[in-house]
Image (cartoon, rainbow over all chains, first blue to last red; front, side, top):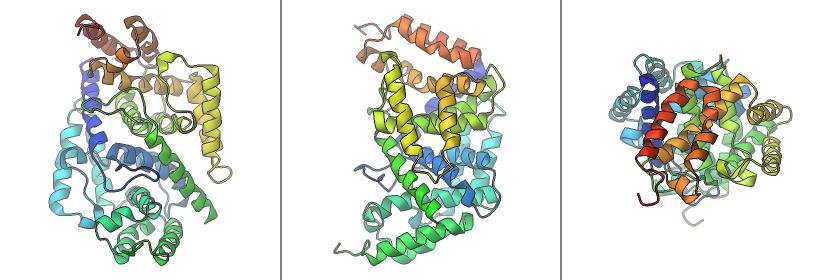
Amino acid sequence: MEEIEKVLSFIIEIEKLKDVHRKTKPVGLERFENSAEHSWHVCLSAMMLKDFANEPINIDRVIKMLLIHDLGEIDVGDTIIYASETEQLKSAEAEGIARILSILPSGKSDEFVELWCEFEAGETSDARYAKAIDRVPPLLHNLHGNGHSWRTHGVTQEQVLGLNSRIEQGSSELWQVIRKQLEAAFEQGILNKDL
Amino acid sequence: MEEIEKVLSFIIEIEKLKDVHRKTKPVGLERFENSAEHSWHVCLSAMMLKDFANEPINIDRVIKMLLIHDLGEIDVGDTIIYASETEQLKSAEAEGIARILSILPSGKSDEFVELWCEFEAGETSDARYAKAIDRVPPLLHNLHGNGHSWRTHGVTQEQVLGLNSRIEQGSSELWQVIRKQLEAAFEQGILNKDL
């Protein structure tokens, strides 16, 4: 009984992720996305793109990783990836995820702390694929939303191509398709100031 | 390549679930929840409560079910469960899910249409557990939010206890804990008009 009460407290605590605002707006919406709905979106994206992964992956592990990957933001907020992933920020996020998972009954959190660390390190095939897919939705938001977040944050074509090329590490076929869409959008002036 | 483009179209189409508003407000927030962030929340809830399921379940299948369970709402919207689950509504939702999944490359949608039907029918142990957990977050929203949605929709104590007792079919231990919390809240007057 006490264990269930602890899980219910955890379920209430993670509500806060619904109030962490990201830097892009979902296609067709005038508001910024929150990290909870992003987490759902990226899980479904991973599930539907799994056959295009470069390496054999365990999609069930990938989905679990992606369900929890942003929980640390409850304590530190969301930061734009182009602003660089600093050591300080990562360590604050690690503290955040440890705090939040510690609400769970004893012994239940270790698996997820490890999964989060694996995701962050990005050195296994599951983590490489998960990190690749995590880039896709915000990129589509910009591609189908007049580059709104790139423009606001002064992100250049080179930065867009450079940072998102990590998609290639998870799925080179996917990167090929997206790179082509990006280049077409650049050609049509998506990042030109006078558009 | 064409297959990937189709999946990307699907990923953009399902953004619309972020604009389907539900009837409860997340704990601590003044706005209504949307069905995308709810889907994420219920997946994590299922993952963390899995050890309390009545029957052996495959949590990976449960999570997949819950990731897609509300996609049909893109076409029909969300309706409060107390307003009864009509045949007409269910069939419109079934059409919706079929339309949305048909955006995927050919052969990729069948698995998910079947999974959705299994969830809706609620006759397997995975579906029973998934449907039980789907009730938990909105119930917590009301319990920790002064019964706001119950009050707005004139839901009685008997209706709350009656409809949510389906939690028992997925996890009787969980229902025991929640029932106790509900009864305590009723005793403290959560549904009294003059509170």
